[in-house]
Amino acid sequence: MRGVIDILDLSVAEVDQMISTACDIIDNPEKYSQICRGKKLATLFFEPSTRTRLSFEAAMYELGGNVLSVASADSSSAAKGESVSDTARVVSCYADIIAMRHPKEGAAFVASKNASVPVINAGDGGHCHPTQTLADLLTIFREKGRLGDITVGLCGDLKFGRTVHSLINALSRYEGVKFVLISPEELKLPSYVKNDVLKRKGIPYKQTTDLLEAMPELDVLYMTRVQRERFFNEEDYLRLKDSYILTPEKLKTAKADAIVMHPLPRVNEISVAVDSDPRACYFKQVLNGKYMRMALILMLLKEAGTI
Image 1 (cartoon, helix red, strand yellow):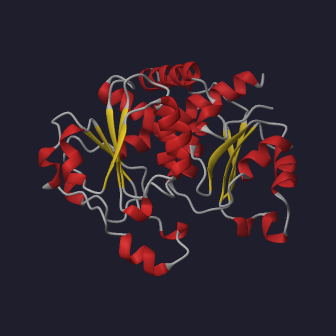
Image 2 (cartoon, one colour; image 1 turned 90 degrees about the vertical axis):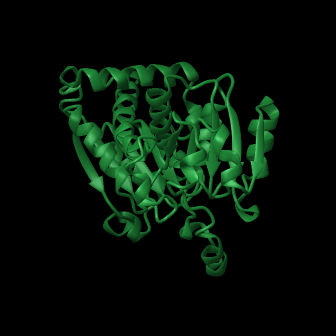
Image 3 (cartoon, helix red, strand yellow; image 1 turned 45 degrees about the horizontal axis):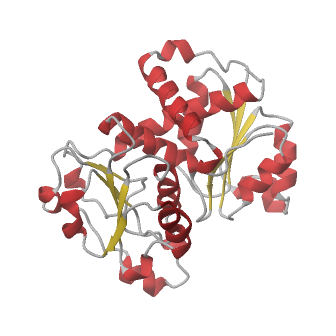
C-alpha cells in the first residue's frame, strides 16, 4: 500500500496536481464536503503537535470523514511496549488512512511497510515532514504565482530542521530556484543535503551568517526555530537560540513583494511586530496546510480505491 513518507515520494506532477486540487477546494468547498463520508483517518501522534494534528483532523472532517485520534504515546499501547509495526497493523483494521508523527526517524516508513492502508508521515524526528512542505509549496505558489525562478533564504536551524531539508528537496525540482543558507556555523545545512541535492543537481546556493546581507535578494525568507529538543547539550541551545530574530527594522531592506514564512511554532525568532506586515505569511501557511492535507488524503484514498 502506497504511503507518503518523504516529499520525494510524490512526483512533481503529483505535487502540481495537489496544488490544483487545493486551489479548487478553496474556491469550491461544498464540492468536497462529503467526498470522504464514511471514511476514517487515524492520527497517531507520539510526539507533541498542535498544528499538524489538528490540521489533519480538520482536513478529514471538512471532507466529510471521521477521525480516530491518539494524541500521545502515553495514551496508546506504545506505553506498553507495542512495536510501530504492530500498531500499524492494528490501526489498519479500524481506519482507511493513517497520519503518524513519531520522534524516531524511520518510524513512519516502518508503519507504511506494515499497514494495509496508506500511511502519511506527519514528522519523524529530524528526518522528514512532507506535509509541512506541501503547505509551504502551496503558500509560495499562492503568494508568488510560481514555484520556479525564485530566490529562497533559509534562516536559523538548518542542521536539524526537517522542514528545511524537505523544502530544499521539493523546490530543487523546479527551474530557476536559488538558495541562500543563513545560519550560525554550528547549525549549517548538513553536507549530505548540500552534496546529494544542491551540488549534484547544480543548484545555485550560497552560505552566510548574515541575515541583513542576504535580505535584499530574497523572494522568500523561511525562518526556523532553533529546536531545544534536537540538542544534546543545553549550553549549546542557550547560546544559539536567539541567533536570528526577525524585526520590522531588518525587513526594511527586503523586497516589497517578498514573503516571510515559518513552519511554526515560533519562540522569538520573528517579532510579533512583523505579524502586521503584509509580507508575513506564516499564518497563511497554517491554513494552506489544511488544504494540502485534504488534497493528499483525497489522492491516496482514490489510489487505494477507497473513494
